[in-house]
Length: 409
Image 1 (cartoon, rainbow, N blue to C red):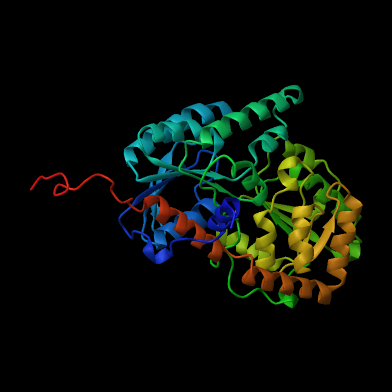
Image 2: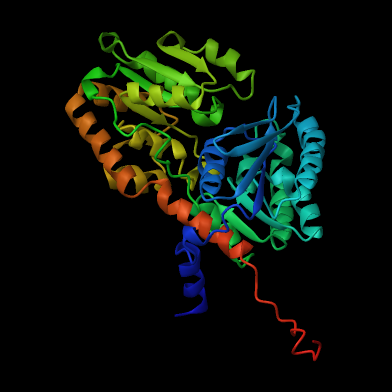
């Protein structure tokens, strides 16, 4: 086996079973300045998995109070308005709290926390970088950055990220596209995908006959998520369908809410705002179509959105962007329809087809649920996470001579 092949096997196959984790003997701190404290990947998947395995887990995040939830201690830092305040003052607050924790391993989730991670490395701490996004591609799509400067800023950010990563103990990319950026830059890169965990949605999906005639979406309400195109598609649907869209999440940028308010089809949608984990479960299990429509930006073209897997686990057919990475999931499982996300007419046709062919839509939902239960689930990813932690935290045999070997009794 070649060395490259051996490294690939090591990344995909856990070396240490979960049972070998040092239960209760290692202190872990997760850090985020951007994500909410109960983020699905950070809190509900990674932190809870580590806590169940016996680790002493602390999550440092923007929150209104310290508390312990499901075995995970939350340490709150102030939530500040404005990107600059967050990137400077919040980062400093997280560093201070991280130093107070004095953890054995730090696991951070945002590129803007790289300076914090480097300081922790200078203190000989083990540090893991959880790469949720392709940073250069993500910056290239930021609407608040003047177009003239996006390319230069994206290139600089990507360069600094790569230079920093060689100092970290491990990198955890969330998608294979992100993984390709890192595997030549660090010895320990472990792909851990955002597959749904068993407790994210109930074990039994709601019978099709009991679901409402609605399409659903939960996530960021932004131009890149094609919210305007969704509303325009709703306006094109036959009125006899009486279809509605139930959309949960926050608008980004906030001014986008005014633009959406003036869009045709707005009367066909209910905006639920930010809802908690339980309410998301109810939302998905009441809908007949799950929407995952993203613009063809570099960051989305190679992504595998968690939302698709969540819809599949809820037994709901998907209408998704026709990108290669999306097609590899939706078309392979035969669990939905793929469309041009910028074409409201195509979106409308897909929604209308699923709502007027309930037997076929139900079968798509069933196939998606079976695929999620069989393949796209958190169990395998959890094993890789615990194996990585066991590798990083297992004491290495000492190479120093013993007292007897040194002739000291």
